[in-house]
Image 1 (cartoon, one colour):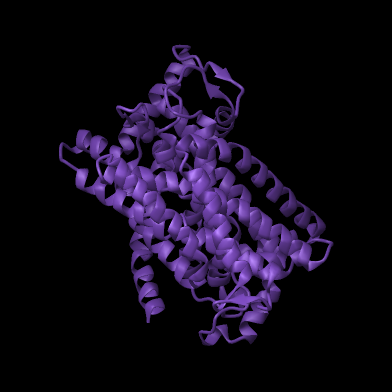
Image 2: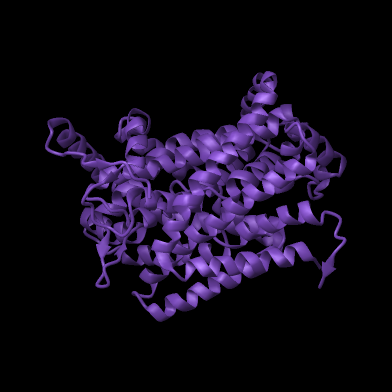
Length: 492
C-alpha cells in the first residue's frame, strides 16, 4: 500500500506539467542566451580550473564546483542510469542526454543568480541559492513579496537532503553494492539483514559524521581531491569496456535512438510508451545532474568571485561532466557489454510484465555490465562498481548535507542550534538508509526532487531577463577590455 501510494504521488508530481516546465525552462534560457552552453563551453572549462584572483567568498570556484559535483556525481550515474533503462528502456538514456543539453543553460542561470543575490552573514559566511533569488530577485522583478515561496523551496530542500537524494538513496546504493559483492547469498545474517549491509551503514554514517561536522571548508577540501579522481577513474574503466566492444557501438546507439521513440520495438513490451522513456530519462537525469533542481547554486554562492556570469559558466560544466560524459559512459556500457539484453530477457522470464520485481536493476545491472564487459572475472567487475559507487555516493552525502543545511539555515533564520540538530538527523538518516527497499527509496527521492524543482523553475523563468542582461553586459566588458580575467591555475 505504501509503495502504491508513493507511485501515485510520483506519477502526479512527475507528470506532463513538470516535464514541460523543466524542458521548457531549459529551451527558453537556451534561446535567450543564444545557445551559450555550447558557444562558451570552452571558456567555461577554462574557468573551471582557473581561480579568480581577489574574489570574495569562502571557497575557490573549483571548490564550489567540486562540492556541487560531489552532490551530483553519485548513485544517479551508476544506479540511476540503470533504473531508468530498466523502467523506461534504452530510450531513457537518449532523453536524459537531450534534457542535459538544455539543462546546461538552466544550470548556468542558477549559478549566475546565486552570486548576484547572495548575502554575507555576520560571521563572514556567504549564503545564497534559490531561496534568495526567489525572495530578492522576484521581488525586484514583480514588486511582490515572494519570501513564502523561498521558504517553501527551503523546506523541500531540507527534506530532500534528509529523506531522499542526499542520504537514503546514496547509502542504500553503497549497501546494495557491498551486499552483492561480499554476501550475495545472504550467508552471514544478523537481525534479518546481511552483516555486509549493517557494517556498511555504520561505517558510512561514521565517516560522514567526521566530515560533516567540519562544515563547507572541510567538505570542499575532501571533495576537491576525491571528485576528480573518482570521475576520471570511472570514465577510464567505462572507456575500456566500450573499447573492448567497439564494434557493438553502432547497434547500441541504434537501440537507444529507436527505443526513445518506440520502446516496445527494443524492449519486447517490457516498458510502455515513449512518454515512459521520456519521463524516466528526464527524472533520472534531474536526479543525476540536478539542473533546475536548485541545489547547485547553494554551493556556487560560496565561490570566491566578483562576477556572477563567470560562476554561472563554471556551474554549468557540472551538467556537462555529470550527464553528457559520465551518465552516457554508463549507458553505453550497459548496452555494448550485452548486459541490458541479458537482463531484459531475465526480467521478462521472472514475470516483470506481470508486475514482478526485476531480477536485474540498479547497481546489480551495472555490476553485470562491468562483469560481462571487462576481460576479467565477473567478481572483478562487481568490485569496480562497488568501489566507484562507494566514492560517488559518499561524496554526494557530503555535498547534499551542505545544501540541506543552507536550506535549513534560511528556514530557521540562522538558528545554529537547529542546524546542529539537523546535522545529527541527517547522519541518522544515513545510518538507517540501507534498511529500506530500493523502489521506495528512489520514488521518495523523485517526489522531493520535483517539489524542489517547481519553485526554482518558476523563479528562473521570471528572472530570465535579468540572466540575459547580466550575460550580455559581462561579455561586452570582457570583449572591450573593461574586465580582466586575472586567472591563476589552482584547483584546490
